[in-house]
Image (cartoon, rainbow, N blue to C red; front, side, top):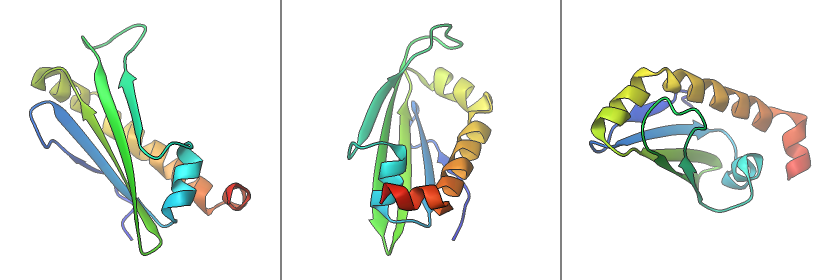
Length: 112
């Protein structure tokens, strides 16, 4: 199983981040939150880029493993490219590593 965050740019304004977790979808879902599909507007009090981004996260389970795909829709290609250059990929990868640790911990059994 790959524990690597895959980052692609499916369009001029989108960033798509995908990671596979060795856990059932329900458990990954519970560790993130309770909704089925997560959609949120990303905006900052002290913005470092103009406008907002729309984040959509989808969880798909297959064979006891869950693929988490988050798509970030930016206002422009220039903003998307600036976000990619910001180091956010490293931050997301670190967050997913922490989620992976949580999923493997005894705390995850309590969620079930």
